[in-house]
Length: 241
Image (cartoon, rainbow, N blue to C red; front, side, top):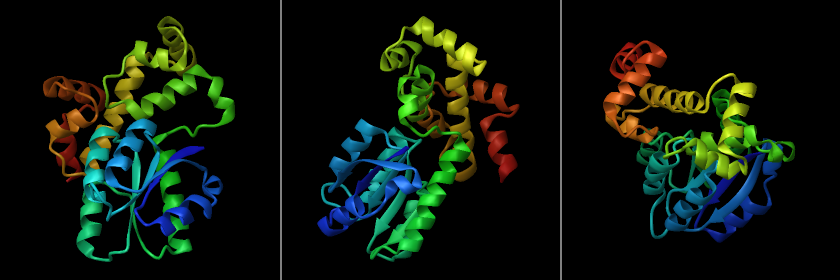
């Protein structure tokens, strides 16, 4: 199952989404709900969900600001914006911050179905692995899932091994045996793939993209990107334009 978090400040809507929708049918497991912006941000930090369904109008922090912060802190999380407001400016701002869809209240079942299928397909295209019971004891799969959610952070072999309850040497060898690549190589691939996506679909500056995907040194990011793609980030972006 992919993980899901829902945020809405209307109790009726929140109860409906929490209790009346069969999320399992879409391949998602609901990991938590929130009713204000700050609570949502804390929940996303704790869970790092694959998908966030996010209301625009919430107390303490509005949905657009939450979305901006999620983009920086948990860039692998997909977001669907939910709102009672049909103003185009909201949709523009949501899309500008990489939301994959925009749903209006009252929620239309067919539109929700379309959005959930879109989210599932995007996760599959990324190669993101859903969590299931059989995977829970496999340290390599656990490591992949953890890295897919936290690659933008200061991730190390030691920290991931600790998360998976195995030794760093065991995890390093398991990556070589199972994935035919080293830990650092796999982490770099995740970061470069996300950088390519942001260069393609966002208006972020190259230095902002470098920070977003986990590179604190812009020059080093450019060298790694060129080694992986044959082009500098600017060359890659210009070719797309």
